[in-house]
Image 1 (spheres, rainbow, N blue to C red):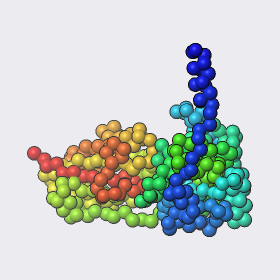
Image 2: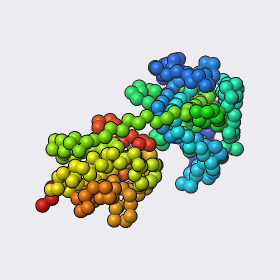
Image 3: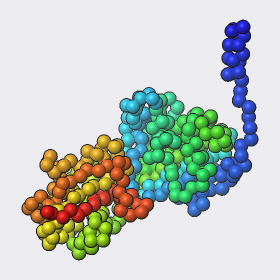
Image 4: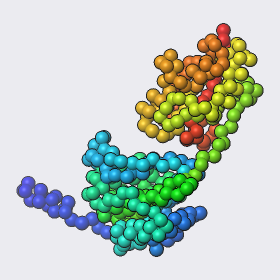
Length: 361
């Protein structure tokens, strides 16, 4: 009797799942592009594809794989064997190609278009040659930093963005580069055919359709838009809300050294402290969400440990007493900056700094 039950259960596991029609509302997202999205003149698109998602940053930094992945997909030590860090105008797009096409055909069309514009391959891989963990590292629904997440996406579009690249066959990746007088331009093309996935209707809608993650970095200078808060404005902010917020204290990524262009803002902060001898300032730094949590906590060592944070710099340029400290290191993940609604501390321009009033006495 036990054997019969076990055999029946095993047969049930092997039976194919019943097929079902995908909701028409979901399929409608493959009929037209994301509103306002368009192709890059550098690449164009594969015929019949639609733009599912797209983001564009006037100036940002991105790491592009330039070698295969190392380590197992489940390993905490997995990584790309080589990457190129590029800065400039960053555009990331997800294209969904028609069913019945291979990722080889789709990526070859992109390669031809780029070659015609003078791009040369930096790195190419396909299948196992990309490394076991390449797919996990490159795009994952549970890793927001890898996803193409735009503003005000409809719920269905957001779920399709999650389902994209969840399970793939025929994985291919190519990185291209073009050098010109104004700088280097990079284009990365990551593609695979959707097969399976854990997102129900959304995975089913993507089935047998090639997905393409297109990442373009064009040389572009960063705009200098950091506003300086004057000594008078610092006093006004402290009187109104008990704190003043500064966006002009600039750092390089993963360093605590203040950049020279921060001197004007530091001078205004020191001027205010000199004019207000009764005040003791408590300085808090907020990181953006770039880097690991450990990096964000450790990047601002306390002044007493020899760090070069904002509190230390103020003591060097302003009051000679201890009124400019202590310097409190606060990671963006643990205490995100909320000085301006909906605004994250600017990247590449340092981290936001708060000065809170604490009266001496």
